[in-house]
Amino acid sequence: MNMIRGAKTDEEMERVDGYLKAHCPVAHGYQIGGMYAAPIMETAGAERRVHLRQLHERHKLVWPDETSEANHNARL
Image 1: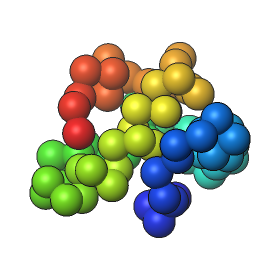
Image 2: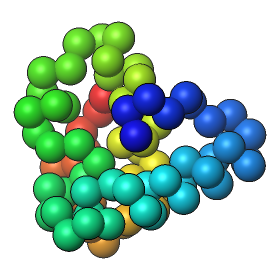
Image 3: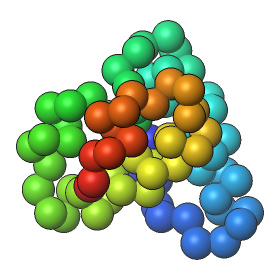
Image 4: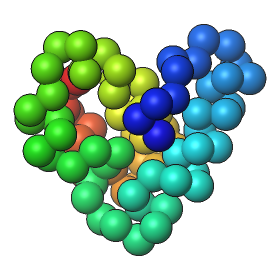
């Protein structure tokens, strides 16, 4: 998941969403409130945040009921 390249086309975005539906923590029963646990979001440097941003944002769309308020509001 962390090695996914940023999607630009609709087809690529569908692939990202498919990965999230199958591989993100909530898909496996882990209730961490979002794509990434707080320590990752709190300690990621600027370069890392750019890399994590798309999956973080897409999680809110794919799993809206499983994204905590803190993760909804968090900015990467």
